[in-house]
Length: 619
Image (tube, rainbow, N blue to C red; front, side):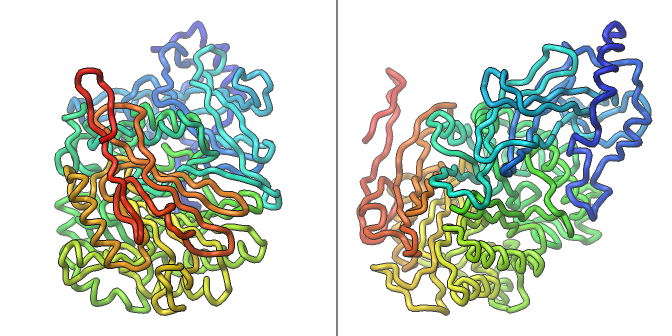
């Protein structure tokens, strides 16, 4: 709907707004301008004599913030006439025909822009204003808005809000936080770490629980924010009213936009984005299963694959996924000097440096695609194999060295896949016992990483991992390096904390019992001397509470994903003392609630639901 009566006032406001200020018009990569939107063309086809009636526009998916710096942060929202997503980057005048895959009909998406104000304040009443701006958005970028709020103070909590120019139509108020200056003496920081949120497998309660406790400063997401599968192939969303749209495997730009939009209807995910500044990175399913440099588990750049997948090549699919990801995630374009780079780093005072890697899509050599496991096993130790690509690998090693040289106390490394050796032969009885889609499939790359740490005497290293849908806590041990004492932890060069999934199922079965899961964990802990704890049963997350003296990791499990609820149980707590480079003994205080613990006890806590009063009790 358009109203000419408000067009003059709104156009006057819009004339002062910035097209370029909306970062989503840019390409995610400076060397791939075709992924960007030509603002000249957008402006050329717009009709300044007609504007949207503000009452016809909706903030469809809340607000979000991310990639915090000491003086700036990225703010995000979506303001649109419909929750429906755009299917093309329109370059014609007027309304654009858009194919709606749910209704199998073409609908008209207007190309007219929307003008937004944004405001940043130090108080949630939005009275002490420190930053404002005006920007446009349009159907070309799915009506998303991403701006950089600047001139902010370090390590400070801010509140922000968007509203349609010249109107009272406003978004929810969001909260965000900048990082300390690199040289600041920062005493303590809390991080919530997530991965693997599969929409049809249940509600994302883990995201909301941290908000309800207000227990951290920032959120780290290690990937698999969405899944590309169709409902039924991987998940049963119809049981919970959580069918991911489009209800088929996704390939096109529209598909990825719609899937992201569907995930962002989960109320706890919305709450987390509204409450915390996120530092996200993708895993494989943001694009496709087991993605690597030249393909995925089910696609490759061959004529046969191109025909079978509806005329979409691997490269086109990657571009569609990346374009939608950058439109929908509160992430900044960082020195995109080559290819589709997402790897980047953050300094949190002189307390820690966070290094977010891309161990999936950037330049990874061929991985385990299910049918080639024996072959990948044979080549897993080849020196030419790379997990990150030469440029990222060199960047990573330089980051480790410079972090130690600047005397940051801790190095926190966000890797999608498990770094530590995990021999699963005891559980699987497999002649290929390692996961060759993880670091174990790239032994030379892993050895080079260990070599940099040992030869440069770089300690206080904390590796983070997701992907596996299980919780793993290990001392970082180089089998080709110093001898390792399992009982004391001597010989370790750090600790790895790998988290379970928000909802994605246990790798040993979606409906596994607690007893069976713990039996598998017993086998895994026995077969891997550096593995100190494993839990397969619970979906959940963990928090890192970091001081100059220690890192404390707190693991939480979600007892029920079938409804939205705030329930969680504490599974285990771990401590790493500064300078020790190992888990403090006795590990986890000698007892955990679930899983298996080296030289420790499992309490075996489980919850049962009382149908009469709707409460849970501990067994």
